[in-house]
Length: 125
Image (tube, rainbow, N blue to C red):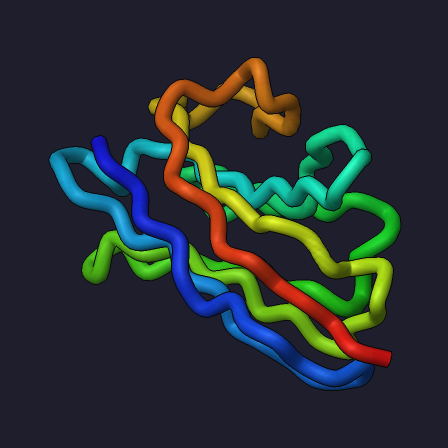
């Protein structure tokens, strides 16, 4: 499985973006997919994740502002980011892992097997 993240850019505080994580390869519908971000000098952190069964997870800093969704036909997971703040600026990366339906939704970077390259989000105040 190969993942391609896109959609980042330079925006102003308060603006919105939609990030895309497009997958190639088989069995995308079996994967949990997560978005992580890493700002300069900071640890990588999970932002949101979506299970193959549709369950979602959001980290506290982004709850209510970010929405993760998936389109299995297009093999793509989206991250809709609203009300961007300077503190949201980071390189956003997506990751995927094959999971069984009954498994819990992975939220740690170490849980994920396949990674895409990052897409930069810059927020001007």
